[in-house]
Image 1 (cartoon, rainbow, N blue to C red):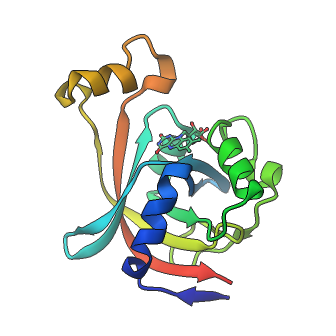
Image 2 (tube, helix red, strand yellow; image 1 turned 120 degrees about the vertical axis):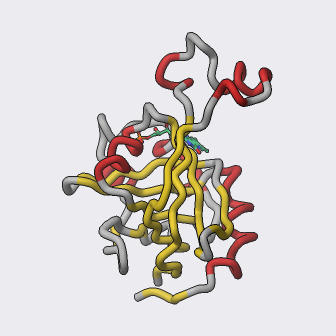
Length: 175
Ligand SMILES: Cc1cc2nc3c(=O)[nH]c(=O)nc-3n(C[C@H](O)[C@H](O)[C@H](O)COP(=O)(O)O)c2cc1C
């Protein structure tokens, strides 16, 4: 069961949750992964409601997005220790090494429009289809941000971000 929503009625909820972390879920070849995101944009372009996520090129999520250009955004509606724990785990472990759904006891709920699932415990859901993607040019950033976020010797953790522009094709709360 789910309750359909107008995503912009929940803009404040979504954007205020971002700094503590929300989840972004992907699926390809029957592998489902989720990761914490703290950055993102909700808005409109091309006459469509959009969520833009920025994912470092080194993430497993990025590999899955290359294979299946769909994702769900999963926002908790109640703060608590469980949410903090899940964000910490899914924001530090890679789906290359661990099944985060199993490890965190998260429940997948089939997507309504996309092939990627929603998450029962993070019920506010945006289903998105990627319309456009672009690697952000570190050379065009102010030097202080470039040095802090993308140090030259920083390894995979300093890889550039790729902006994925997702059309929001469904928005609801899992009940
Ligand atoms: C609160 C929080 C926010 C994060 N936000 C982002 C983000 O916006 N973009 C990003 O690429 N990584 C972000 N990360 C790091 C990823 O969640 C982390 O590297 C994760 O292990 C990647 O998982 P994957 O390899 O399965 O894709 C964040 C981590 C935390 C804890």
